[in-house]
Image (tube, rainbow, N blue to C red; front, top):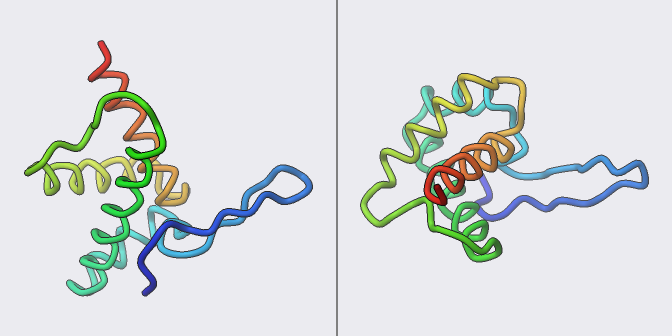
Length: 105
């Protein structure tokens, strides 16, 4: 499984095509992480990279503090349970925006 930010290309209609681990649905992500420990670690690595890129490109508070990775990964799983048909990357973005709103209050 490739690890890194998904390649996102805009189509003429404005829809996005995603590639890589972030493009799978939350339902697929949840099934995959339960099947194999190595696959779960690949996803954790991808999420960490995606989040790092997200934090670098958006101003504002850092929602993921050092030492809170396990708590964050559980939050991603919970977000995915709430939105199983959405891409994993959407769940992370939604979670990140919620956390930033709470931190900004």
